[in-house]
Amino acid sequence: MNSKKSIRQPNLIISVLPLIFMMILLLVGYGIFRIKVEVLLIVFALFTGTIGRFAEFSWEQMKTGIIQCITKALPAMLIVITVGILISSWMVSGIIPMLIFYGLKLISPEYFLVSSCIVCSVVSILTGTSWGTVGTVGVATLDYLPWTFMNYLGFFFAISYGYTGFAIDPKIREDETKPGS
Image (cartoon, rainbow, N blue to C red; front, side):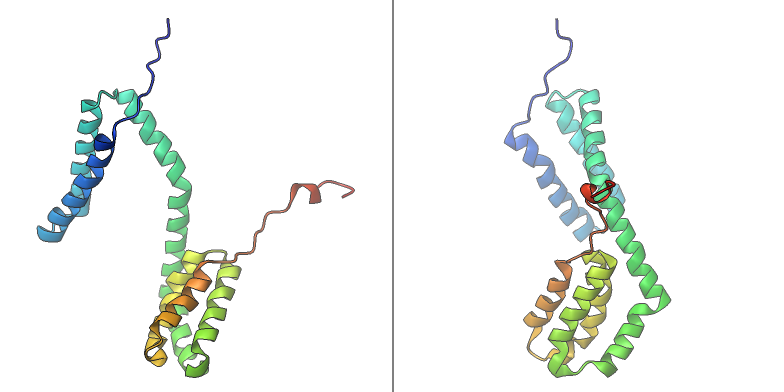
């Protein structure tokens, strides 16, 4: 006899209910009553666990699901943390204020969109992070926004071109590492 229970999928209402509850919790709890987000997340976790138990999921099934989700999301979280470290170190060390200072002296308003697109692309290629580009050079070019007058849309296209990020891929193809190839 198979002692392993089959994992059943929850229906649509049970799946959407935690999302709706979280939106309401954040809008009312944080938006109106200014309750700390950490407290609201704990309340949300309790609500979601209660929904899971009500849907007849065992603690082992929920724990396995939590571990699987954290395992999938951890690489993305580490990237976001690393980009945050890069952005904050550039702000603290004065790189972004320096870019603003010298950029105002060097960049002509006629070539602003072209130069901001080129700078964002180069930084994205060299650092290998499109999020880092938007958070550093993209923020630095926001100071130039009054120079663009009514061409705000072109400004955001220039930064987003750098954000789409063509990064140098440091990986070497496997066949290039074999002797005699």
